[in-house]
Image (cartoon, rainbow, N blue to C red; front, side):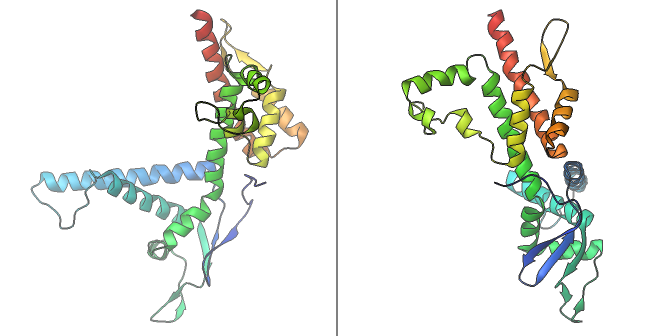
Length: 260
């Protein structure tokens, strides 16, 4: 089973045969910062083009940022560049064809190398792997919590499927063509399994408003349980924040049902 724990220090990414990059780990904060920086650059380009056109000039080969595909492509290029410049600290196999000498690692050279196809795409996929896995894991844990804690769903609903021996109870698709949420959003990583264990242990540890509305989990208790079990603190705690969102959404449905 795969894990969500990223390297704790610099590590090497193999790009193509004979070429490797040394990078520093990408955290959730780093990922968000790179996205915001790329978004700002895209907005600056949009404003510049608008100013030029407003002045009566139409630049040759101008970008059509009204085209969603072109806009997304440019944004993706900016995002890759931001990540590369911020995190590539060294490389092997990158040489100057004319001088036949190693190319120094500078922001300008990083941009030039990563801009070459397919280097940029390979770098993005391999470097952001842990964050991609984490985002997918957060979606699964949120969805399974929404189902588990919804009054009309969860174990109560599934018990009927088990009793009737339906296909969805065996991991297949039900009459509506959908799989049971417990199968569809089952934990696929070690940390998801750990987070689900904490969810079940903390099901009664909820924070309530004065009117009894559920607003979340008791995160102090959550953190104590993570530490007591020796789980991976950072990724499991991130997953628990999304689990909390799923629980709140599910129990808010409970409140709506009660009012109805």
